[in-house]
Image (cartoon, rainbow, N blue to C red; front, side, top):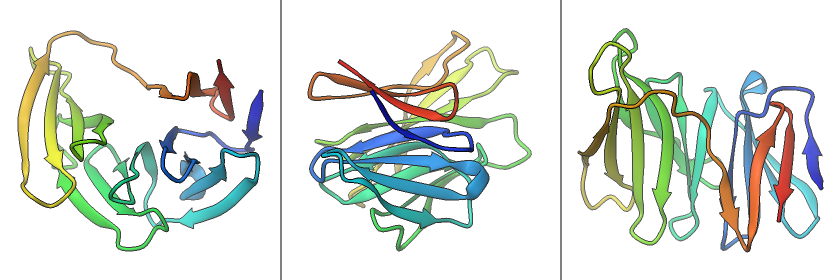
Length: 170
């Protein structure tokens, strides 16, 4: 079942399990959009001055976070207000932020950083979204080729297909 089609690339999606909403990023339009999972359709377009990729939502804290330009992680409220940079890497360094993951129960954001010239290709950093501490390194991977992710809720997979279509599969 197709939930929505866009004219431009959809780079990422994230689920708000408490609010029963799906957020997705359209980088070419500098926009994050929100859909109601009850079939209510498009609810909100959050205009951004940045290009958002790799979205994650912490429902309990009412925050959405994303990767900007592979060099920083930004977060805001679910309404797009109070945008803050929470982690930043030098734009000209070899390190690139490639993925985010969320432990919603503990409000921990996991930031995956890729370095193509290092023997350790991926470093995983942990950041506390509740403001109770900074970030720290929690792991390293030597494999290559880690790419996008899927979300899972209520027995269904949610993912982006062909860069422009949101799909659910159960």
